[in-house]
Amino acid sequence: MKIRKFLAITLAALMVFALAACSGNGGGQQGGGEEGSEQGGGEEAAFTWNGQKEVWAILPTTGVPGLMMHADSMGWVMEQQGWTYVAKDAEGNPANQVTFVEDAIAAGNVGALMIAAMDTPMLEDVCNQARAAGIAVDFLGAAPDYEIAGYIATKYSITGMFAVQAAEDWVKQRVAEGGNVPTNADGKYEVAVDYYLDITDGIYRSNAIVGTLEESETLVCVSTTQSYGNSAQQDAYDNAQAVLAAHPDCRIFIAYEPDEAMGAASAIADYAAQKNLDLADFAVLPCYFEDPTFQQMYAEVVENHSANAIKGYSSYGATATEEQQNTYDPTGAKAYSPTGEKLAIILLGVCGEGGYTWNYGEAYFDDISATNVYGTQFSWKQGDVNPCEKYEVPNYLY
Image (cartoon, rainbow, N blue to C red; front, side, top):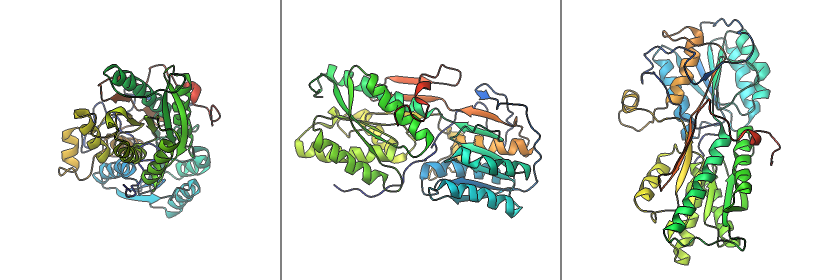
């Protein structure tokens, strides 16, 4: 069956952050220097806020629900402190993000910027200019080599490694219970990878996915494709169809994010129906979890492994508490993001607003986790050894 196009989840990170002591309505105080924080390098330079209470979220696109969840939650927290919130769409072009920062400086009424940075080196000069103009800047999903107010980043490489490890555990358990998962002539299970290489974090994650597969004793990568953006789900559907035609014994698919996973799962459902195969013998695992449709599919397959091809995922951070969600939107129509709240706290803190404090240049890295339908868990938190450091170089594989 053909599927409709879905927007891709966040380019930079559709990411969720575990907060230690933040209230859902942004009304409590939150200082810098908590466990899990990391100071920026060099001496702390002076920052003087310009007093303007308009904040812009400069995004790769405003058409991605997961990314907007973070940005809108940030904006809502700041609106509670009397700020005006505006979202800016760079339409996938990093040069447009530079232009928006220049526009904010020229406007004279902007006091803070949250940027889901597509190219951090390209933004360095304008971020320094914004700081000189009294504009606080923080980043979502990127760790710059220069100092800004703060940033929230994710070790995307580990999400890729964990997705593969969760798949490896899945196939061992599926075969042990009598599942029909074929191997190739070398006795390995075939894996198709759908990745994204247009941003640094995407390269790191893709490096880790393919690199972990290369080191696996039981899995082998037989295909790599790319699908991302507004047509990601349909592209992933088409890619999975092509993989199954070329590699009919392939049963495991590692997807970049939920849209790609759902596209692949839809193609697999069609293929399995045509070939009279059990969907319990297929596994699709993305490197992100924050999509309501995907979450519903996963909940269904946990109860019945033949319900669909989704069999696990990796992700980062924590979801909102019930109290946070109810304060933000009790209907649940709009999901609340603790990551967005933390982004607001960074900006409000360096501006001395709302009773918040923040050490200029401080950073946070998300906790990372993964699981599969058998309940096997993988986890990493800041302070642990980074098992994917070797993949966090531009030319490891790609």
